[in-house]
Length: 486
Image (tube, rainbow, N blue to C red):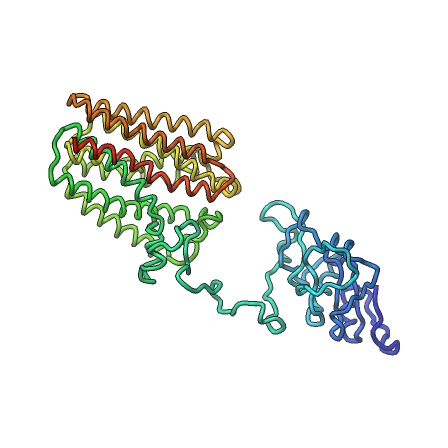
């Protein structure tokens, strides 16, 4: 359909049978080509002198146009276009149509809800609004003919950010902030700018992981003191050394995790803002930073007794394996528990010089606790994990997660209770035993409170529940500390 906007004498024999060439020739004589749906778009406004007027009149009202424009339920809106030099004959209309981009103001793309016969004022360039057929994920029809194009900033420069060849501009203290970091944390507000990517790599802006690694260390140390009935100044250093070591080894472990998972992290909405996939830190820089943290932690470990040093070196095995667990098992949270609760064994060995059954039971209680809180944490990523094939207990349990979480809760309480009984009963102090048994009891109630708040579809709520496990883990520390005062 062609609307005549020039003198009849201007229309001659174009000498071309190809519709694509015909459309290009119309530009020279000022004709207004109107294609009912050449690209799955509803209408074309292609006259350089009258771009704002409606050329369909009453032929297409907004209801019909909305049906033509709104293809989002069938096809995604992808702003790409077909390369016109390589198109098949059936797509030549689309090629010529995109070739007339300099004539037009733009094409409408938003869904029209109200019934009006007035023309749309909102639009986009033809090259930017071309639908593609929705087929398999990450597959395109005729992919060799699909290219990205740069918007024409000459006409609408105010609508675009400055073209610097870099990432979109960010200003202020939130520049480079990781998506799941606590807002206003000290890394994003107080740390020197050059250190922030490395501190984010160590999760210093998300301290909950350091707490979850440290608390089993303090459990093991305090239970060992209650077991032997003696406490020295060196035990204070063990507690402080465990705190510093937990910060460093958590940082080194997270750096190792981000190095191995850099491609996976780039595909998950919650993790794609991490320093490596976001391009803030290079792979070489991350590796160097990991080694530095590990060496400082090892220097602290050397101040502990030989049995603790052996346990610390042995801990490197589960730390190294954990990032790969999600690729071969549905239980990566169990591997995290093995690595994260190793401190219960190490701290007991640092005080007593050997291992016994109480720290082993305490260790398994910590693994059950990790399965509880990390399953909750993993529910935030179930959709992305399913798309990229990452395994987790959250995906494995699905709608049965509350039942499994209840089982982990019970296992945590019972195993910690048994550890307390075996550690304190030989001393025969009833008051200490009663206070110590209150530790798993209080922690169990906190986990039950978390379970009542659990909603697999509320990501913000899941993160808040996960972070609350710092308080849950501090409850045994509190009751064990009270026992030491008796």
